[in-house]
Length: 458
Ligand SMILES: Cc1ncc(COP(=O)(O)O)c(C=O)c1O
Image (cartoon, rainbow, N blue to C red; front, side, top):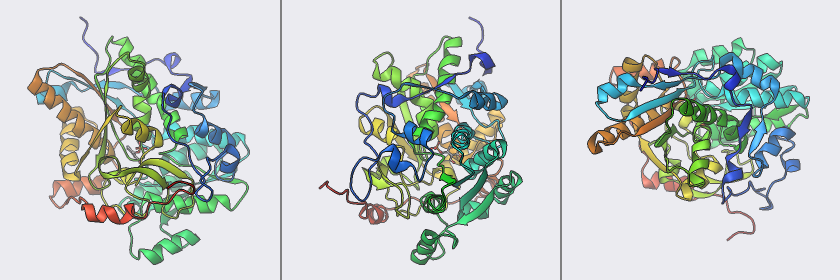
């Protein structure tokens, strides 16, 4: 048999021309977004002040399996896609495992992550509808950078509320966003009413994605020419990230293989929801029994220790309610180095799949994932983002189980991004000052007790 190359590339002509909407093939759909005041399912009209209409329709569309990727978006994708499916030969050799380890590398663009896949789509649709300005939040900074790139390309203004601990840890992230002419505000800030409220309730807080979302939404709904965009959690974002899974599916077909295990790190669930989409479809249709694994930080364990319940997507309680695994919108995660995984909730699609037993979830502490990150960097020559390192660690563990059992499984994981802006974190790991924080049950209970009551439901 011919040797599988280190990197498997599709040609530009082979790139997907549609997004795949997994909800269409889920026999049990994710629960709808609800209006927190009435308990009624939200409509496209309800979402109008927040999102542009094309995205609101994608958000609520549980039926259409394939949604065309607009030509201008396809053209932008071709600047940095298709991304390679890589075979981790050196890692396999080091682990001495019979498993075949593959990773889909999404770090080859200025944002350094998969986030650009949804940023380009969201900015395109906003521009088509005459929107002139966008607001958003960013945790690790990848999403803010990606959106800044896309806004600069399509000519829209952007304000980014950046979680304060990332703002302080990553000044160069801010500098890139400003290079693309975005306005960057550390969150919580005193520029919004909700920011001032959060600062009064939690003085000295290092912020969270939930706070930053609340501030960005508040600023967006105040002007008719401004809309809010979110980099994760939402169904529309998972939809755009399906391009990752679709490319993997095609690349595996080229080498006549199919993954037994698919692993993704999980912050709000967008890269995970995207990479698993076609493999979950096949699983639901009984064609393959792929093991799907979500990996989250032990410091923000929404799937492994949270509750499946309706909750706000933000700390200021201004968004609709989403049914998801959550540690509570008021939970303030410790200032860990995987800033992109510090969100209290999980995508409703991923949550529903997990709740219905179609996938597993596990968590790791940050010192464990940095050990895996450093090993991976040495062996595979890519310095991974701390978020991505969660998937690396899980892939290593799965490959070691294969070593014990002797199984030559095919393992796929999402290498969502690079860690060049995370050198403070790498330095802390290298010099031994990195610590782990795992919340106690009592700490988690505080925010869970404040989960909202849904009007009309017991
Ligand atoms: C490199 C990287 N990977 C993963 C994530 C997690 O986001 P999601 O769960 O939406 O893929 C982030 C979020 O910022 C990120 O920057």
